Amino acid sequence: MSTVQQQYLLTIYQPDGPPPDDIGEIMRDVNQATADLKASGAWVFNGGLHPASTATVVRARSGAEALMTDGPYTEGKEHVGGVVIIQAADLDAALVWARRMAEATRLPIEVRPFAFDS
Image 1 (cartoon, rainbow, N blue to C red):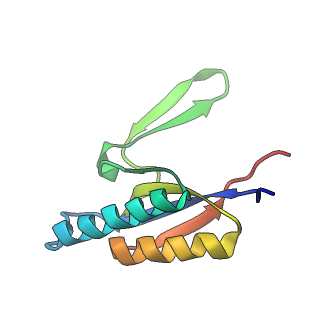
Image 2: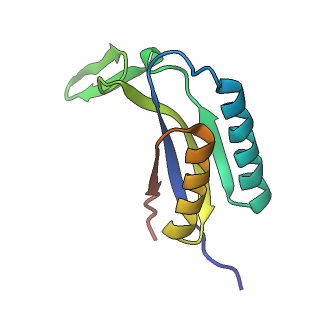
């Protein structure tokens, strides 16, 4: 009997600015955590993002062309730096992987389940 897996978004928040001096060690740890995710069958997708300064925000306007603004949606000192999508039996299992990614990245990880229509 198979267990239904819920998908979770692990959002990695990183501070603006240059990478830390130990980025090589961090990337080694991230690559190992990602390899472990894949080996476990929990991995769905992951990717890092370019700096928030490269973002464009698109806003729909009723009866008019969309408004496009250069830069991130919110001003701040931290922005989304990457995402990992996993599948896990429940939130507790997802939190185990989030802790692993937080340890690897040395950054905060937000965990949110995807909402699916049944």
